[in-house]
Length: 201
Image (tube, rainbow, N blue to C red; front, side, top):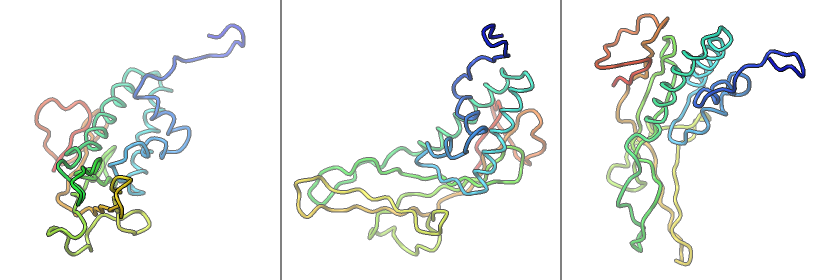
């Protein structure tokens, strides 16, 4: 209780709960936008919104302890998927200098129709003009139906500056499924110690 204003106060949100509560009171893109190698479809952002609202409800209902555990688990899953496969190593420009920061995969998240559950699709980086660069019909696209393109410029001082372009081709599907309290049936098998979410392929 704040005695100066006589208003009820609650403790500050604990990381990683804070971004979820910020999203619940603001825009979900404040949360989803920080994961550069995750592509959220509108339905995936809708599912993330559902989780943000649920976490806010847990806090309002006096279950901050549970909300913190749930937020930590889903955040850890997002971070794992965001870094899945790391960056491509040993890429070079024609002059032999390294091409840096090209993600090996981008993971697309949609809604799978279960409580807290996401449909996943992994896309692998394919260098433009390489042997793997083929029919681009199924390549990853943005929300506006443009091809997802990742470009890197060659070093300054080398003329002409080379541009290395990657597209993203589909490689596998799966789900990020919630198994915790109130989750209902997901028709999946979780092996090992699953607290709240697990990734299925």
